[in-house]
Length: 447
Image (tube, rainbow, N blue to C red; front, side, top):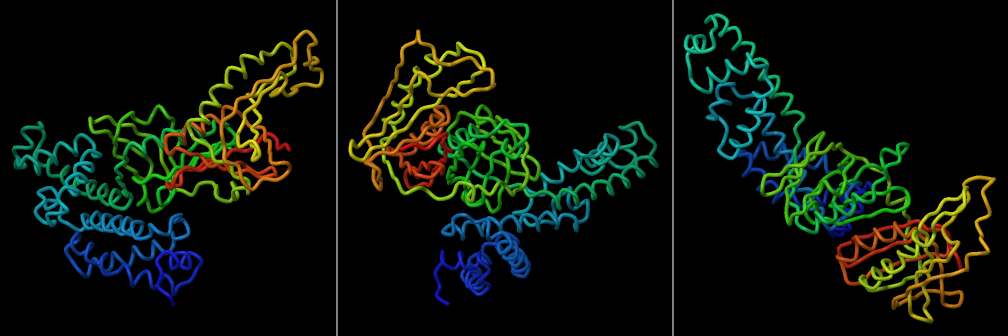
């Protein structure tokens, strides 16, 4: 079989075991060196690496970027090594754990943090005897005097406390899979933008969430629009995690932060010590790739800033000029987007009656002869290709949703590529080479 990294990954994801065998052969040498240095044993490193390859094979379908397979696999191997180190703690004598004399040097900080966390989970009486006798070095008699107890009570509590501490460490060693990621300004901006795309519909709780997908995709959708942000800081994420009820204001306004992912929570920590914690659970998320489909054939390329100007210039002609004067109607800020290859432009248009929909059978007549008809449009240059029907195409969109998409993408690249289709398919927005993209469902397709 021909050896090609991305091709092997794709074939392995499709179930080709021979292709996965080539990947194992290619990545084993350097990963084995890495794990041996960390774990201090070649034999243990081989066992841990075997666990990592099994996990990678099981999760391979979740990898969205085949070219990042090496970094993805490395993250899985590091997580397996971390879990092995934590399991090893349970095999150590309790006194060795507290004195930190037994583990190799590279394990000490991790063990110290885990042991202290386990001690913190003990009841006050059990924690007091552990701290006084083992950590402060007092004898049984001295501990009894300081805590106003009988010596026999101290010995009994120590015995129970050791058993309880051991159980806490075992539980934490089995469940703790914390992962840490360094996020830069683009990563944080992406999280902030994506959080604006979540839904608050009580009937669709899965859409209240932001998905951190394997390979560094950050995704959210409310069913009408979707933002897919490529995050370099999360490129090594091995499997999806869902952040529940994340809001833009929860993302710190800073140039860098550390994201700590655990089994049931996620924490953003800034350099100055601020911490924002919110619920998190392992995936899977919605099958958003299937839902959005493929981009349409019509392509309009516009400058990001020019499109933003159009979106902002037409905004005063929406709600302010569409005040509801009749009952039985509702208004949605609706604009018509028109692209023309002949004119070489993209235009946004609204009219007096555009955006209204009837909410009841007995609604008053919307049209008022005393109010003159009017329309307003704005436009910007656009390079439009692959279009028929006289060289133009029209589609009605929710202006507010369009605005959030342009705001999210305009700072990522100077140009936005917009793909449209004559069917009632969603519009696709893409920028640059970093794979930041958005999808918007149309309100109506025109000609």
